[in-house]
Image (cartoon, rainbow over the protein chains, first blue to last red):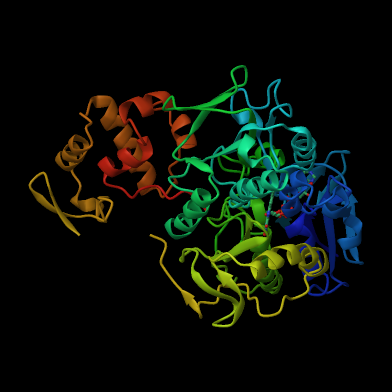
Length: 414
Length: 102
Ligand SMILES: Cc1cc2nc3c(=O)[nH]c(=O)nc-3n(C[C@H](O)[C@H](O)[C@H](O)COP(=O)(O)OP(=O)(O)OC[C@H]3O[C@@H](n4cnc5c(N)ncnc54)[C@H](O)[C@@H]3O)c2cc1C
C-alpha cells in the first residue's frame, strides 16, 4: 500500500482529498489528511462577522463532514516534515510515512513582526479580522464603539485575499451610516502599496470608490512600529497616522512547521513551481493554496483552480508521466463595496484585472470591475458554493481553472 | 521610449525605468540619481550593487528583504533614498520597479 499524505484540512487540503479519493485506486493508495482543528472555518466570512452580517455559526462547521469516506482523517498538530526520510512527525509523537506529500498548511497572521502591534492594546483598540477570534472580538468592540478615527491598515504584502482590507473599509462606511453615526467616524485606509490595490487598473477603480465614500487614503506607508501609548502608527519615513481604533492586517506568514522543517522562504512560504505546483526542492512534494510562494493572490478561488490542475498532476506523477505546466495564476474575487453592491475581478500571472463579463463572455450576468447588485449576490452565494461545491470538489458550471480571455478587455501586467 | 541620459540614448518605460540593463553604467546611475535629487556616496553604490545582484538572481525585492540584506537597515535605506526608497533605488540601479505581489 502506498501513502499520499495531505497536511492541512483547510480549503485546499479538503478539496484535494475530495478530488483524489476517486482518482487513485483504493487497492494501491491510502490517502491521509491531518489538521490541528476539528472545526473548518469559512475565512471569507470573517469579513462579515465584525459587522453582524454573519453569525458565528455561519462561518464554522465540523471539518469531518467535508472529508470523504475512505480518507483517513487525523486531528493532530504537525510538528516536523522530514523530506529526506519521506516522513512527518505529529505533535503526539506519531510518525507518518508518505510516498507523496501535499502541503496545504495555509498562512497565518504574525502581528509579532511589528513592534507594539500585539502588545497590551491588542484586542483593546488594535484588532485584526483575519482570525476567527479577532473577528469576533472586533464585532464586540464595534457594537459599543462611539466613534472617532478608524484606521484600516495593511502591514506588508503579500496577504491572503488582498482585497479584504479594502472591503472592510467599504463595509465600515455602510455599517456606520446604517447606525446613523457616519459623521462621528473618520475612516482612513493605510497601505504599503502605491495605490489602493496591487495592479494599476483595479487601483484606479478602488481609489475612486474610496473617494466617493469619503475614506481617506495613505499610500506607500511601510510601518515601522505601533506607538500604542499614543495611539499612532509610524512608518520608516517618520510619517505618523493617529487612530482611535486600528484594524490591521498583520504580516501574513506560512505556518511555523514550514520554518521548523527548513522548507520555506523569508515568510515561510514553500518555494513551488508556479505552473505545476511541484515543490522546487523535492520531486514527491507538492504545495497548494496559501502555503506556496507562487506569485498570484492567496485566495480560496485560486486554491480551487489549483486543485484541478494539481489533481491531474498527481495522477500523472503516479503514472510516471511528465507534469502539466498548466496553472496560469488564475484568480477570481468578488469585492464587497458596501450598500449591497460588489464588483468582481478576474486575473492571472499575465493579465491585470480586466473589464468584461463573467462567467459567460458577453453575457455575464456578473460584470468585471463594475459595481453591481448581481455581483453582491454572487459574493453572498459564494458561502453556499464554498460549503456545498468548492470543498466537495463539485465542478462549478462555466468556470474554468485557467482564465477565459473571451469577453474581456485585457491588459498585460507590466 | 528613448531618453538621453549621461550623453547616451537609453530605452526607458513611461515611468523612466530602464528597459535594458545592458545600457546601464555608473554614469547613467549617477545622472538618474541627480534627477531625483540624490548625490551618490559609497554607501549608495553598495546598496545599488546589492539590488542589481538580487535582481540578476531573480529574487524579489522588498522592504523586508532589505532588513535581512546585511548591507543596510531600513532606516538608513530611507535616509539614503528619501521618499519611496525601493522605487528610487531600483530606478537608479537600472532594474525594473519591484512588483508588489498580488
Ligand atoms: C478575512 C478573509 C477574507 C477572505 N475572503 C476571501 C474571498 O472572498 N474569496 C476567496 O476566494 N478567498 C478569500 N479568503 C482567502 C481564503 O480563505 C484562503 O485563501 C483559503 O482558505 C486558503 O486555503 P488553504 O487551504 O491554503 O489554507 P487554510 O484554509 O487556511 O487551511 C490551512 C489548514 O492547515 C492547518 N494547519 C496549518 N498548520 C498546521 C500544523 N502545524 N498542524 C496542523 N494543522 C495545521 C490549519 O489548521 C488549517 O485548517 C479570505 C481570507 C480571509 C482571512
